[in-house]
Length: 125
Image 1: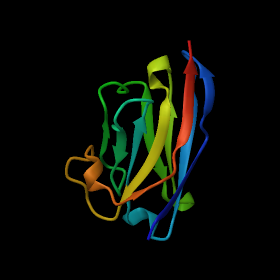
Image 2 (image 1 turned 90 degrees about the horizontal axis):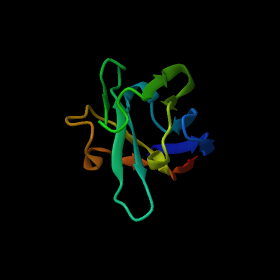
Image 3 (image 1 turned 30 degrees about the vertical axis):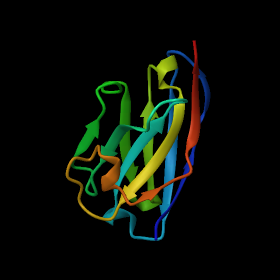
Image 4 (image 1 turned 60 degrees about the vertical axis):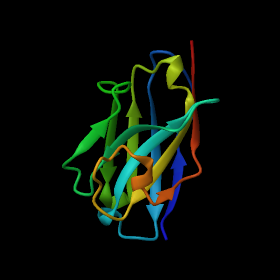
């Protein structure tokens, strides 16, 4: 069983930056593929970014490409999502997710086995 705990959400003005973090426990972190999804009010959960176990592969949703950066620090059992040039449409609950196996698409929620409780990110215009 893997436990995931997000932190770092909050309120930021449009154009600003924010970094959310996710600490994992329960399994060797380097064996986990990690991802971030988000869900805005009234919308379905959507893929944001993912990173492979070795950090050799990353994937981003088109809507965040060039603005968000996913990274991981295996020594701290933590994955990060650095969000720059934030827009009001980035407002959502951001969920950290993990898989104990290599991912195929990296963007399908069904590929992941564990989810955090989420952290709210609000971008004001």
